[in-house]
Length: 235
Image (tube, rainbow, N blue to C red):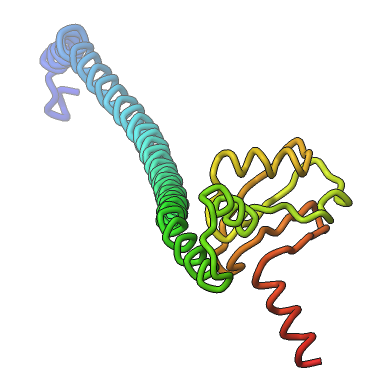
């Protein structure tokens, strides 16, 4: 080896130094490096796992957020629908009440108008009766007593026709040209002998009364008598 220029002692020394260096590096450098690398790998793995968990959480949050938004939209749509229905019900109730109030007002106005008309006709009755009695006095050439005047007036406006006895029914309707007095109404009820009697006023019949029981009618009105007279004359 010396012929090759190699010093065996130096070579052995170099080898020993290299072995010692390797042992020292393994003891003091390799293991720490490996540990550092392993720790770094663990941190990277943990970071990847955290990132994966974060992605999963984000996806879950997106799904949950979508569910919440869908539920909110559905609730809002239901609230709008409920509000629409309630508004329509309210409007319908207001309209119905307005219609009912209008009908009540019209009915009340009609009743008041009928009452006012009957009051006016009742006030006119005495004047009509006075004129009629005056005309009768002139025609017969003698004065009629007050009692006879009242009898004539009662017969003209409230005399119950004899044919009423043929009618049968529980509810009657009596129509007169002018409102009958309370005593005249009682006399009519007694003559008809019905359980229920309704009185109405129709100036168009001129005088007398019309009695209706169901579809049965006894018409003793002056207007009907004049119509019969006209028909007999023209016939």
